[in-house]
Amino acid sequence: MSHVALRGVTRVYPGKTPVHALGPLDLELAQGEFFAVVGPSGCGKSTLLDVMAGLASPSSGEVPDGIGVVFQEDASFPWLTVHDNIAFGLRRRGAAEAEVAAQVGYAIEFMGLKEFAHAYPAQLSGGMRQRVCIARTLVLKPRLILLDEPFGALDQQTRLLMGDELLRLWRETGATILLITHSLDEAAMLADRVGVMSARPGRFLELIATGWPRSRDSTIVASESFGRLTSRIWTLLRGESLRAMGHG
Amino acid sequence: MKVSLVRWMVIVGAVGLLEILCRLGVIPNFTVIPPSAMAQSLWKILASGKFSHDIAATLVNVGIAIVSAMIAGVALGTALQGWPAARRTLDPLFATYYAVPMYAFYPLLIVIFGLGDFPQVAIGFLLAVMAVIINTLNGLDRVPAVLLKTARVHGLGFIQEAFHIRLPYAAPYVFTGFKLAVAYSFIGVIGAEFITSSRGIGYEISFAYNNFDNPVMYAMILFILLLVITVNMSLHAWEKRLLSRRRRA
Image (cartoon, rainbow over all chains, first blue to last red; front, side, top):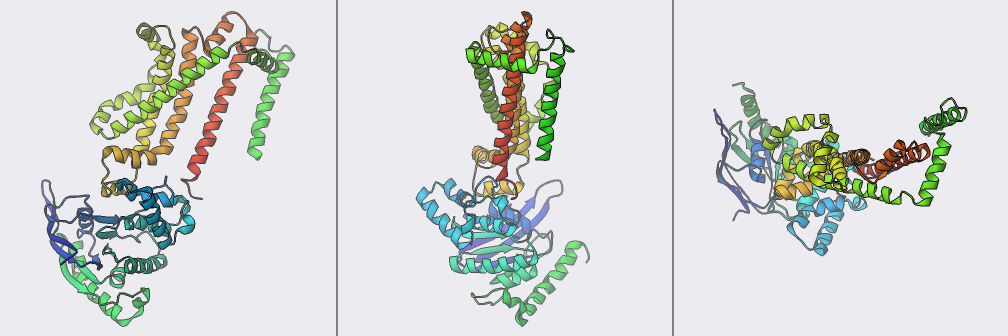
């Protein structure tokens, strides 16, 4: 009954001494689930992203297609207006212009970009540009939206607010989301379940259910259970991070 | 505001000085005629329509050289960017291309193409095309990795990626190539007209020179100067307008 499933996914970089970067990894996501992946640096998070986004093929195992991606770096197209940026994927798919206009119009409104529809990315803030990228993925209605540190380049306050924004978007669109992040707080605040990855080769050590209601927002970071949750994730991660750094 | 004022003062000062020196006979009239006489002569030539055919021929040939250099240059640049082995092989050619005096090939071009407009266009094209190739490659090389990843996530192939991602991103660099192509095409075509041609602005200047016809010669030199300056300033303004939307407000 799972909506998105990874089965036995591995990735080995070939070479004189092949590097086993990932897996085997199994993951099943329910429709509308918000899943976050955290792990020590170098654990294979970006390999997981590449494999899921179709930028690299898995050495073994199955990865579903129809996955949309929002990258950490600004991926807005500087030569297109906000409207045309968001319409990009739809047009490449050959959607009728009337449908493009309707979908993009909705997404622009939804993402609070209405006044900027005809502006170019250079005239927007970093957070605004990331919204454009999210909207560009969202209008394609992918089976799963993969977010790679989407707020990594933003400052802390903007990150929290964008987190709220993301939760609202997730609730209202019913999207299934997989967030890759190095921020424990972000993972613990946003996700239904947090997958804690091991040091290389990256596997899931544990899948932790956060138990948050669907209507959550960033104010939960002040709650006691948020503290318990992050400390539990950190306990798991600490050992792995030390291993990844070569201590023990 | 202040800079442009100083700039105008320098120009007006230099032209005024030349005028005075010519009028006083410090510079004899068989060497240089006063700027006012140049302008007067040019006005008469343009009004009489005497050289209209030559001017049109030059402009058409320059236009053909520019357009063909742009098409070939962007296409070759894009192809080479997608074919690194060929690019590495051709690298020494890129590095030494402008060291080759293209005019040396003029006899060969006449042998091959005859005495029509083609040799002039070919010289203009040969000078212009490499600037377009090099600037296109430069722009294509700078496309951020994340945009290429986005292209792949959207399932774009090489050609689609070139048209929808790489070339639009590279547009400002391609425009630099375009500006150079315009300059080189003028240089190539008009220069070639000097050597062997029976019409065109370059031919008329050379003809006037051989007949000691200073009023016509200087009038046409002035015309070329004004033409090239106008074209380049328009391109510059156009480029600024295109770039303004790509830069932070």
